[in-house]
Length: 453
Image 1 (tube, rainbow, N blue to C red):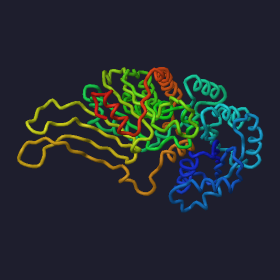
Image 2: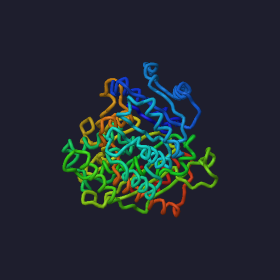
Image 3: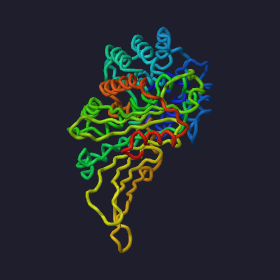
């Protein structure tokens, strides 16, 4: 197997892809013969590239010296379509014995996707029907609906959908995979998973970091394209989908698409930008790009009549977290002391993987005093050995031809239609400048008076 990474000199390779491949190697999940081939425009040889990776890696890699002999580097300007002819010849010359299984991972900005894909296809490096040749696209797939359609049209004119893997690494996270199990394997949840019993649902994704060195990329995307179009919408679809007629890849995705196609956006939305964003490297003066987005929406299905969904994401927050909070409706009973609070199911995706159930019970003592209580399940506490990262799971699925955790084209199309509409609305919304998490959430609570943030 040859695992080729375009854009290999970026942070994604050092922080996620190489560690994931290393762990798969340690777990004996990679073929006996494999090469990790980094493609970039910087002037490295193999040793220089490996040294650059080592400088940015964190953690314990006890078998690194054994693994790194599989890493090689090829200098190439992948923005030049003419460079792919020489790349094809190099593969046939140096990797002839490993070309039966070829994975091409595009860890680049979306604008390079069509050039790289076209170069691979035109030079017969990836051929229609050869299911051992696959192209993996990092998110976002496209910059808007028009570009995404153009990329997809070009791909499917030349190769099969089964050779295309559009990755959203959040779908590889353990607790997001757990959503369907929690819902459909437990009668106590699925029977009340509807507007009659649920008051509202929040999906929250905070990032403590600023844009750092990604300013040039981030200013072209913003929070809507960087987080909402993929991570938050995919999570929303898993939470809100109707029961599929079977738990296979196609049927689950059919139901997810129905959710995305029935989203109705509320006017109660907010966009913000953290103070100091304009001083970041690569950010043009006067940029109106949002680093914070808060959306209130509804899903026009019989299951979710009038139930509000709240999606919140932002950079430079006080903490990094991702959680889903399902809040149930009030109890109809009155207690003389300690009025019950609303039940909640909290699915914690990051940093702590787990599930909390908040319920009401009797306080200790002689009085019939209702008080809130909590059941707490820690997912990581039940893991023995290496805890698989999202990229480990997804890379292994690509190797094994399993597309169940990858986004299908109609999912991407539906999400881009919503984002394009929001991009139009965004220009008419005031951009809130915020110093920290407390400041922006205080403003949001003023807008969403009916819900506690």
